[in-house]
Length: 462
Image (tube, rainbow, N blue to C red):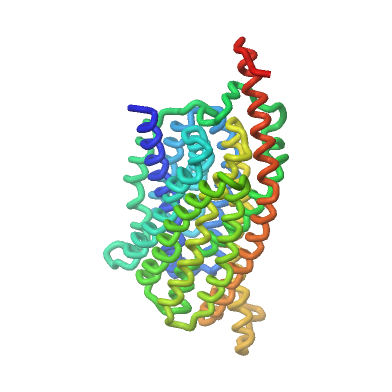
């Protein structure tokens, strides 16, 4: 197999793994209304199922990122896929709320291997000029995985012959096949796709401090927390919003979300990757600018989608689909920027730190925070209608708030465009530091390459 064929094979396997990553991850969001009904959960409790997964994912990802910088990344990925696929199957066996939380914690441990190992592999397989497109292919697994999860999970959940538990069961076999395929990815040389061969040179000091010393990385980490808040809030409650506010069935809601939150991301990723690789030829901060403009454009689109009257699903779908599609440009542009400012031996660590903040501060707060906001606005609507909530708690409070849950989730949705506005500002601020940080990295790599040649006895031009 030629080097090019090995790269294509690796990218295809990584795409398949990322697809299963997001398919498995999104099942609780797709069937959440059924779980809520069976176990009589509040929105805050429903959101906590996602939050528990995300918190362990964020914390365990940091040591796994260091492991990705020091060990065989293909085998690390294979082990992670095997673990999370097995425990996704186990999630369907849960009989209580806390059993489900425990299984999702285990899934989070397995899935924490995916991002640092995969992004580090791509950085060594593909040169800088093509990384945005390569990352677009890898991240294509995100919208496709989400779309398949909503399509399959909600269809199964609505079937009287199956039920929501089977949505977890069916993910096992494709996950195990991905684990086997990962073992056949040939481990590339670290830094092998860079212009400068730095040999074994690494900067001295704490790897975490080195990553966080880069201004662009600090802006990117802040942007990740904001972006993931929105993505996980939408992923956890968009189906609920359509069922409660627009009166759809769970299957109809799943089909709509599959399109507007899942499939709409495909053009967003490719447009982001294309524009990111094209603009980087003339502007070293171009990728971050593309992301900032795209996110800014989502603000009016999502705001107008939320304001559509009950039953206007077509216009809602168009506006929300355009908004979500633009949100996906973030992945192909910002992920590639990380590769532009981080040296090869620190990329796994950088992705792990980024994902830790992205999920612990954003993804974890998204489902739980949105759910808490929904409960708050439902309680406020109940109080405004003359319902006395003082002294109510537990199941009694949940029953009193049920008629007002559409008001709660509708009001909470306005958080999304507000966070998008802040995110666009953060991305623009990050675009102002990229050029200096990228030049600093290239200068260090040139000096390290020269030192490596001198150590080997090669003649280095003055």
